[in-house]
Amino acid sequence: MKVSRIRDLLPQYGQHLGARYSPRTQTAYLTDLSLFAQFLATCDVEEISEVKLTHIRAWLASMSDEGKSKSTLQRRTAGVKGLFSWAHTSGLITTNPTVGLKSVKVPDTLPETITQREARELMDSLHSVAAESDTAVSYRDLAIMEMLYATGLRVFELCNLDLGSLDRARELVRVTGKGDKERSVPVGIPAWKALDAWLARRSELVTERSGNAVFVGEKLGARIDQRVVRRIVHGSLGLVDGAPDLGPHGLRHAMATHILEGGADLRSVQEVLGHSSITTTQIYTHISSARLKSVFDQAHPRA
Image (cartoon, one colour):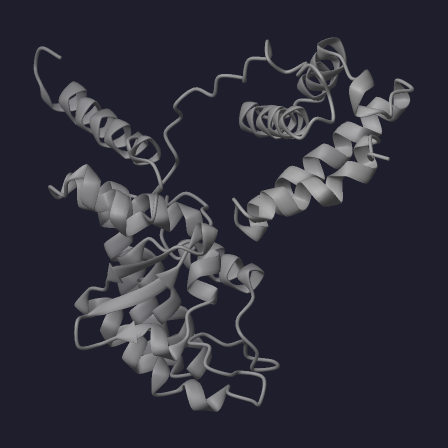
């Protein structure tokens, strides 16, 4: 007898997702679908064959009323479409109710980031803090900030760096990104210097829990947590007057924007950031264009 209740199908569908997506993406989709199943229960619908397009649209509408962002609605729409496409292909349903369902269009918004001047001021301030305090933690935080800005790594990629990932001979760092895809990212001289300064002090924080982690926490010595890195970034940006309050992803945006402004081509930026599609990278051309327009408006006498 085939399982047909949505709640009971989710573990099986999770295995299907696991073969195609990263654990992070898999968890996000399954969490969304669990919320969908909860909503259907309020409509007295549990069997997947009972779900109609009207149910799905009602769920999406309820989230829109709650003020959910368009990107959240887009992801949850994709999650539901994926579930029913899989169910239809697997023979669990005879018709797919999501065939006529359109994804919410998410406008191209320009991610907030810092200017090149603010980036220089930020790093200069952090170097001063590290030199004055002369602690292992201050040198670790400096290295984290320099690496995030130099490489554009995602925060989980930075936290997962091992000592063996550092290729000094070629001035590269080997990274495992989304979908367990590996890539090599170049590292600039200032970031290497900051990294060397931290590694020279790393032994002061190392414990039996440290393993080969490049960055470790100050309390237990275990691999540094993403939440700690976010606090470091927020706190560091507070050193620069007028700089926006950003997280690690803001430094990723800054790196991509600044190297494009410096003349890098889009394909190279795509490789460095680890985007599977160049469409994702293209938003940074919009940022650079927007800044160019802003400069033009301010500087041209007949703008």
